[in-house]
View 1 (cartoon, rainbow, N blue to C red):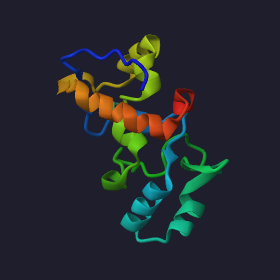
View 2 (cartoon, rainbow, N blue to C red):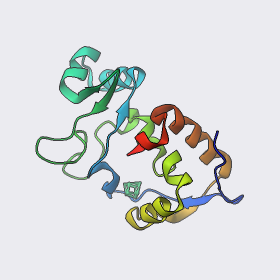
View 3 (cartoon, helix red, strand yellow):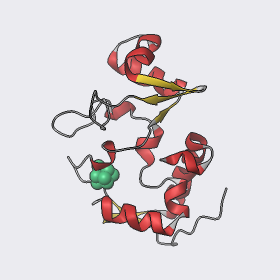
Length: 147
Ligand code: SF4
């Protein structure tokens, strides 16, 4: 694991209900076979159908499709809610604590300005952030794949 610079007291973060900024705009959401199976179960569709309807293959991996003609997640509702929230992928669960963001102070400061939840609420404990970073390393592999 890289040497992540995280304060002992953790970092304050609390997602703002209805914000959904991180579900819009450029970037990929990587989704594993297990995550495909979980969302497919939630939607009561077969995994192969799910892959055809909601994903794009990138080499030997999958990313979620955007909506047609809009760069926002295919599962974002008009009210700015995630329609598969209970089964959302690790990448979504761990934002903004992605390896690339935590390793790059400039990028972290950029995300701090973009995400109104960063700096809000109680601190997320350092240990929990390290766990999320470890999960993120598995998702992204090379941290440069993170966006
Ligand atoms: S940008 Fe931040 S506050 Fe907004 S939905 Fe994403 S995590 Fe939550």
